[in-house]
Amino acid sequence: MNNLSKVSLLRVQLINEESEICKQPGIYCWWFKKDSAERILSILNLKESEIDRIQKREIEGEEYWALYFGISIDILGRAKWHILQKHSISAVKYGTLSTLRQSLSALLDIDMSCSEDAVNKFMDRNCYWEWEYTDDFKEKETIELSSDNKCYPINIQENQTIGKDIIKKLKDIRKKHKK
Image 1 (cartoon, rainbow, N blue to C red):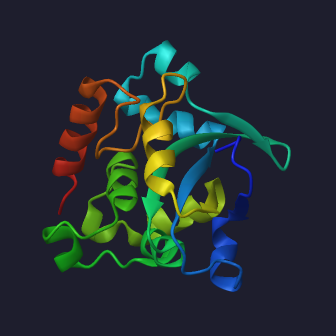
Image 2 (tube, rainbow, N blue to C red):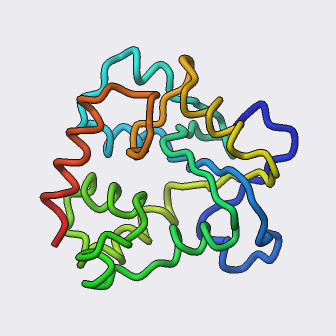
């Protein structure tokens, strides 16, 4: 998303306090501190070529990695879903827990039904959320998710930026933590 014309970037812990996020269509990206990104990705055994294709950026003097890309017809609703969602037993059981939260729970090695606090703290301490409003987000999604020079390792659905073996491994890890 570095090349997008009008993007906004916000520390996750501040999103509840901000009113600048609107209920509009758009695309978004999750940025993780380098050391935290390396820690949660270590279990996936990424190839060096995949790690090289992860977008990296300095934010407030620290290196961050873009690990997750998304699209929504309601950016405000999607932000709240990923950031504020409760890890209820029914959300875990019926698969309505945010895909990002499912992956983070599994990569942090905590069962999903009891990982809400840990995931919240992890995101608050280690993440920025970037978004752009757009009416033509399908085209941008195609460009971002199929690009040869980018890699979003914790995306699962329709992710063509990473090897199928990594996606399978992440799905398997998520299944083990779906409790």
